[in-house]
Length: 244
Image 1: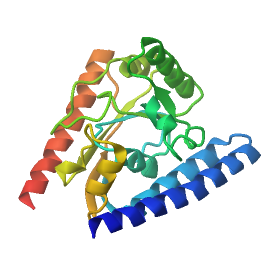
Image 2: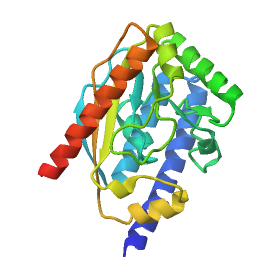
Image 3: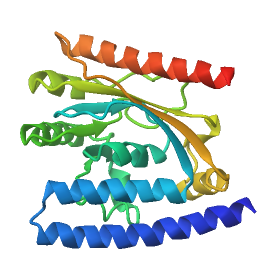
């Protein structure tokens, strides 16, 4: 039964995404790359995927009203849908996403910044791209752990983006993602294996919190403050789950 549910969802996600992505790219071309169109299509694409996958989101916090760098812990590919559904800014993601069907086509639509974590030159180019987006007045979403981690709290953060935040005087907004099912973590298995293992379940429950903007006197202090804020919220959500 679970594989039937997962198959139906996969087909609906593919078909719906094709329609929204192709339509969005056409609109983007007609409107000369309008960021308003990009944000509108990206947000609705993400919400459509969450609806089809029956991801029940308990959202708390406040959507940023200014230019920020939003940083969240990273546990699943669903994290992309979660962040886009509430705050469709440019997102920093691994370069492999650019080769995925549909996701790869949406790179321009969603203003994704792709990074090859094994290449120093790619990392430098990514930092420049983040700074360029911020200099244009845009916001950026990234996962400072540098990939998906199977941790209760956050893994060590990468420093580069915090230096850019200080350089551009951009506040960093902490965000916490907590899945009620710890098996949601996407490890070394393939995308399809993980999808069929998890999306065959009737419902996926997740808490998504966006905190207040944070500034600090140095990039090191900023990193510590953001990491502490996310860890504090993850611990709070974990305790709340055990007490339910």
